[in-house]
Length: 398
Image (cartoon, rainbow, N blue to C red):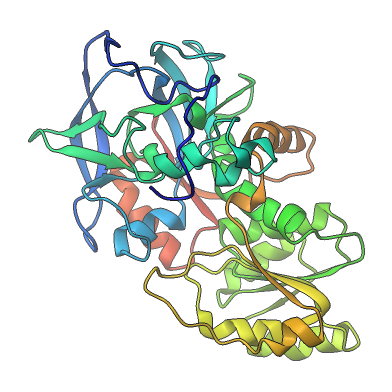
């Protein structure tokens, strides 16, 4: 089992249904985007969806962000179970609740946290819900009792991305993945805080611990990188350097708060050294689409004494080597740390970020470059890979 041990009892989240639990209700047909095997395109198909079991809810999806992580699963950079329904950055409205669900009701508006949080395991109890034991179970794409709720027309079981499957008009998820939000938040914007925005913002605020006056380098300006720029700005960074080869993304980085941009690390290195008078960046946040271990030594060389490099982007599971002079860590007390979900806590940070959005301090509107229908999911990912989007969003009411 990944990510630590399985919690034996979770009062707030009935993860494992009792043996005598009755499913209740009847199944339904809905439509979803399925990846049948590594490298294949998303296929839009009718599926069978079981009703929610204990601790689960049925949600009608309103919107889903199109995160690069789903592309990682499709290409095999992240190992997954196939066939799989994509999507993990979603928001919708609850239509049915299973036995034992606590604090959620039919009609509630919810945002999914892509890593579920039980609230009881050691990681959750110490404020690190991104490392939740239950979340680790659900990341495999199978329900916590080891069974499936989503099925192809052939009868074959379908895994779901992080046990959410937001590229589906309806989905069944564990209540540990749901955060209830106020009804007036637009769900096509709120969905973004389920993954990309919180991951980027938290990478600056929590993982990097950006402080007022810091000089910050963000490498890669997609949805996560743009949010890292916003997080650094809100944390009081003096200068924010944004690196991306795509001119459109560099322009957008300035909109979100960057003070300087560069097309490559090679171009950024002398710029940062000159502007900071040789000090270099206090914090470096890696948010490239696909990580490259050969670049770590290069960015460490662009980091100030006692500076910190945060690796947020996904590296291929097959990558086993990293280029790094460990002398940087010892002689200059530089730090290299990893971060999942921005080291954030979904039950605090999702509502918190939506309040910042409501107050005009966090820009979610500009984050959404284009919206798509479910049928256009492959087109949306083509746009992402071509650098045309900061974030694409599927709207199910379109």
